[in-house]
Each structure stands twice: as structure tokens, then as C-alpha cells.
Length: 386
Image (cartoon, rainbow, N blue to C red; front, side, top):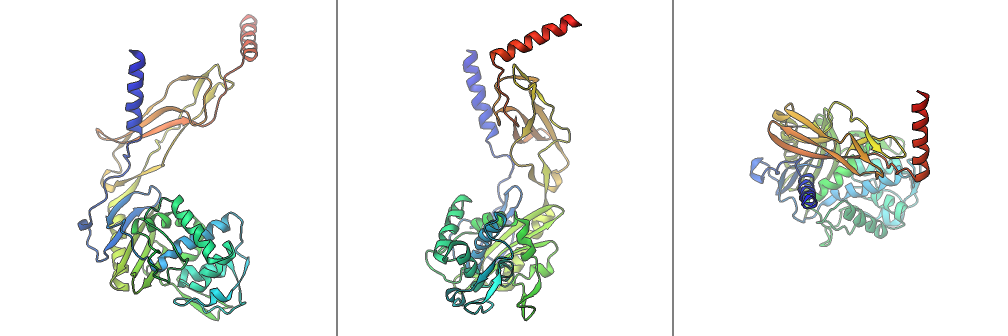
């Protein structure tokens, strides 16, 4: 009977711990008035979706495609595969791109940093292809990497056929939600904001001026990026990011009727988020005490929290959270790293809003026979000496 009770308790606890309690249901499309047919509003650190409008519909993304291109370049930079000062030689293929460009000449040489700046600020297709060729050898091989990365990020409604978004191929599509996913990943790298927050700059020793296609960089408080796009099929698209007081939001609007309307829609979404939401800590003020380990190679193990450090809450509910921690005084060895030791329940009044696992930060092995024997002898000697 005790065994059955333990089994039932285990599954009840597992169900509670795996219940997504951090986010409310996204607002319905009619809750916020925007013109764009496809949109999503997401908080960056938790990935919580606040608002969505046909957010999983597959559609052409235009140059917002370059969010993924910039992500792969940024990851290559941070991995040391390439450097900011690595020199890129423009191929004839890269120079043949149309649309937004800086008119690279075949054989022209620029650093990775200069080319990445051109992609981020003026959406330069020629520089995007040149960087793709540097990293993967060809645009086709780079596109394979783009699709692999999309799969890793859970972008279920995305398939890329080029690295620029210049061509409206039937097989080149994504969704507002998927763009938010890759935008969230990209702005997690502070490096990219060195480029996406530029309003005006230049290359070629000041001879070629750059002005950001994202007007929010100039006129919206806290704007951090990210990418505009336009083709006749995709219409006016935008992934806009902004941060205030340590909270960053991503607003994606696709297929807007005009350039001004896409920026207006993004402002509407971001304004709503900043006005109504904030982050609440999922970490109590007090530190977690060590848990004793019986018959362990170490006397105790340090418990740590799992999961996100924060949860998104309406501002009216940010100050009413309580934290109930459940930890045993001791556990028996062996203890595995990541082993669940206890839990923390976060409540707003009487409502449980989150349940967080508390796990072992490190493994603790069980003492062997001779180690136990030595410890026993040491204990007896200590008693007698006392």
C-alpha cells in the first residue's frame, strides 16, 4: 500500500512540476488593434507570448530572413570560427545580388565586422551572401545550416532557400512566431547589438554612408533592433526589439500594407508590453541551505533551482508573490548531479503560479566499505579522546 501511495504521489508531483504555469494564454487577435495580418509579441528572457495574430501562418519573410543569417554569423564569431577582422573577398556571385546592397565589386575586400554592419543596418544582400560563402563555402551550403539551426530552435513553420529573403521562392517561408524565436536567439548575443543599434554610419573609409532601415532605432526609446524587409509578395515586414528596465520584448509584424504601418504596429505592440507587464523573480531573497548527505563522500550537497529565473506577470501582480520551499534535512548517498531534492511553490495569494524543481548542483558518491570503516574508527577515537 505504501508503495502504491509513493507511485501515485510521484505522478501527481510530476504532473504539477511539468505544468506550464509561467505564462497566461496569449491575448486574442482582437485584443490589440493592428493592421498587419500576421503578428506576435514575445518577452525575451522567458519566451512568453503575450499576443498573437495568425502567428503560425506560413508566409514570405523578405529580408527578415537575415535574422537567421546574422545569427549564424554571430555564432561563428563567438565560437572563434571567424573574427571581426577576418577579411572577406567578394565573389562575383555575391556582387550579382540585387535589391538592398552596397554595390560590392568582385574581389573587393572588407572585414567581417564591416559586412555584418552593412547587413544589420542597410540589409545589404551582397554582404549577406559574401558572409554566407565565407562561413559555409557557398550560399547553398549556408542555407542548409540555416535550416538545421531553425530545426534546433523549434521553428516548425520555416524553410529557407536563400540567405537574403530577396527571392520569393514558394519554398522560402516562415511565420511570425518562428521569426520571434530566431530573433530571441539573436538578441541573446550582446555582440549583435553593436550593429543593430546603429542609426547612421559608413564604410569604405567614410565614402559610403549607411542609414538604418529600422526607423525605431532613431525614434523609439530602448530600441535594440532588429530587421526590416520588403518584397512585392511579402509586403512590409519587421522584427522589432526594445529593452527598458531590464525587460526586452520582440514584436514581429508581417505583410503590412505600408512601411509606416509596420512601424506603427510594432510601436503599438511594444507600448502595450511595456505598459502592462514586468518580470517577477522565481528566486527568493534567501539562499538555499546545503542538504546533508548520509554516508556520502561529501557531508552535504548544495541545492540549486532549475528553469527560468523570471516569470512574466502583469504589473498589478508583481508585488504579491510568496515562495514556499520544500527541502529535506538530509538525503542518502549516492546523489546524482541534477537529482531532484525538493521544490519551490510560488503563489500569488492563494493561487499557485509556478512550481520549480530544486536539484543537486553536484554528484555525491556513496562511501565505500573501507572509507566507512575509517570514518567509524575516527569517530570512536574522537569520542574516547574527549
